[in-house]
Amino acid sequence: MNAIDFKGNKVERLNGKSSFCINSGDGLGFIIAINLARLGAEVTIHDNSPAVVLAAVERLQLAVPGSAVKGVAGDPSTDQGLQSLLDRVGSTDILICDTLGAGAVSFTEAPSEPQSKHLISIHDNVDRLFEGVVRRMPQRDWGRAFWLSTANAPDHLAGGSVNPLLASTDSISAARAGMSIYSILVPSPILSPVSDVMKSEVLRTQNTFDLIVEQFEKDRRPIEIREAAKAILTIIQRINSVCI
Image (cartoon, rainbow, N blue to C red; front, side):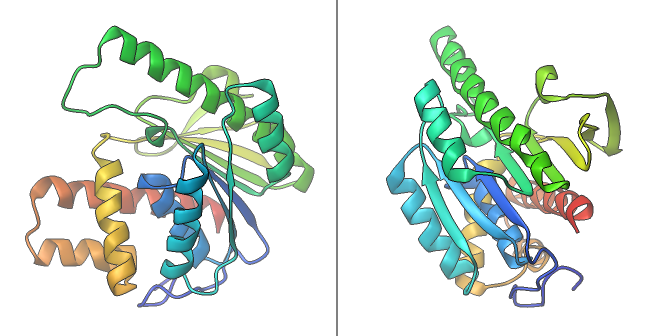
């Protein structure tokens, strides 16, 4: 295997790099946190809820024994809350923002107007945290930031022109030395619950994500789960391709 060994143990391709994963207490963000930890990066998990953060840190340490992981909880909706989070996170090398973990509603139902306004408010708060961390990243002269969403990253986060990277992935070249921002289009919100299925498999088997996807195929899991698992693996591979 290029990134990690056949049982998913650490192979320190990102040794010495730090990462901050917004809304990564569960779902797709947590799966990406596992991947970064397996590559040797220091991982900081974020969620609004302290209880969710504590549980996620414990699960990540079980998924990747010996990993350097910590958690920060906080709500960026107020100026005080945002500043507190930024102070605790400091500067980081790799930034992951899972907007699907920021209050996404069921993809099988059309949201009502109040729900839509609620989601807009939540995503505005995520924007604030994402942008605040990005502004501190150039201090390290190297940075990779990823905005995962069912829509493109907001224009004000770009700082430069939008260019295609791979398939449904856009690269936003930030006007800062050594800094790149990538907007990864997530094909469906179903990826978030299927990420939890994959997390359970990681904890049970310690297998790599590609082996888990292969096993889903062999087991003839429902087609929706198999297709979503492949999409998750592709997202992980694309993140790895520009970080390693």
